[in-house]
Length: 453
Image (cartoon, rainbow, N blue to C red):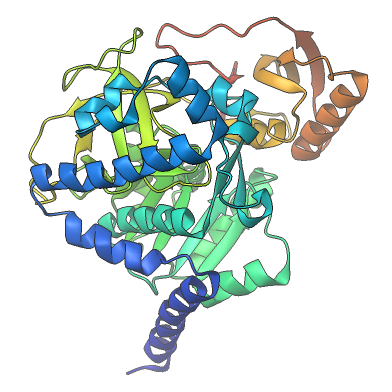
């Protein structure tokens, strides 16, 4: 064995050990949950429904007994949880909306533990409305197990190296030590400009990563940049995308440049929902969540018909999310997948392309720049960023009474930190940001293609 191969093998074994040590130290039970998921992914669907029902009944009893919100909400709607005797009976319960989560966050928390015992998550997804969510160690373990199961669909094995492209800068020695020990190279896209693209290009040229893990639009922009330089790569085992819609032209270009398959994951607001198998089907992680598709009146839609997606997280006891509407459109598919899995299958979530704004200095602003940024401002209920002209951005904002000139000053300062001082930012306060025909809200509206000259 050569020295390079010996070092790679040693690094992979250290990474495997680090995952297990981290799971043990945090007490999340992630590997126990993964064992359960792997055991259940090939059982008959009727058996899977019984497993889901067992989890569901325990969750409902807990939510009704230990949260103020569900006790009042279900009593108000005349719900008797003892009458929920099948997964299909879930449709008898009222829908939980994002407004409920924002306005009744404390009432949704279980009284079984102090809030300080829970893991706090701030949602900065594509809804434009930051929310505060809570998990405990067990629900966090299930979430991570579901995520890594979906990674395994891409061929990932614990010990593989990967380049992670994300928007949040890595702070502190401990997260950096964990990255090193798990063979993760962490590259933040806080300034997503030509210099950053050159940095990533050098990493790809000098390190033989097994995988890239990225927002869909970030991977697409990287592929565009590399193609413009006539670069291509053949050593990667796969690309894993998440966080945004993976459009066909995104997938085609990424796979062309990196000569490997793209595996897309779907989730939201602290839930890991589905991942693509090698045949391209989005398998729902059934032991983790129950997915329903409903029309505008809340009626269940038949298979293959697009509607509003509801998720029930079967393991989040600190802050139960039962029939929670994520704001996405999708369809359940009645198909038998050639991969052999029996987990349910859903369509790719539907929506419009994520707009990307390119500034005159080469900086590219993707939608998650703004969702992360505005998640810090409770004074802003909804936002939309419109490119009026080159380097001129208009902020359409729905705000609370606490919003004022100081808030605007801080927002402008945060945006200009991303743009390196380039750009004029205009304020436009509105009562409502209208939805599109597909029931989605456009959060970034660009005038020019992100790689236009």
